[in-house]
Length: 191
Image 1 (cartoon, rainbow, N blue to C red):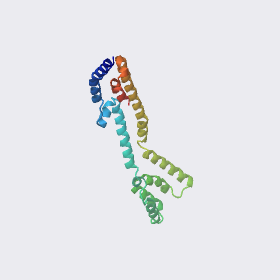
Image 2: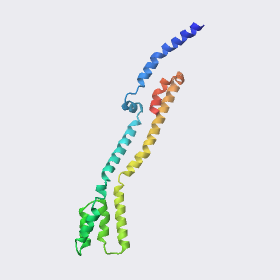
Image 3: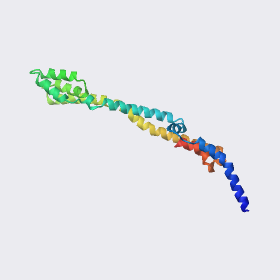
Image 4: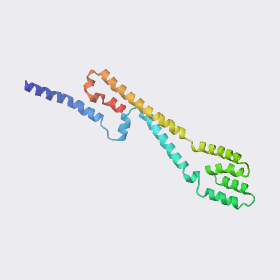
């Protein structure tokens, strides 16, 4: 009886060996590209979202540098231009702001143009200009926000597709429950 058990164990191992070797070669991961391919078709929109987000971050990083938004020496230059203008400080300040085309100059321009008027009028004009500039500085951030919201949902969709594939394998083959190599493809896609 003991010899019979040993023989059955050897036969069971030799019959499973080719299936295990083919399953391990089919699920072997050698690069990031293998992960992407095994992730299924949902990886394409996820990759596109990643590229869009990376592009927006890079563009905003370049556009929102301090030298472009508020250049060094702008306030000192404006002060000097207005002091050296004599009696025409308003025109000299406005001309200086127009020459230095940056968001800070576009916020200061209404203040300089309404120099000598009531404080409420100047504050209102500066506030309006500031709101316009903030809108320009926030450009593409909505795209980044949408991408950050959609990407995890796409990942969840890929997980659902992978689990469906795994359960289809179980449903198609009654022996799949005990054999993980038959489920590996769907699980790879899900994860």
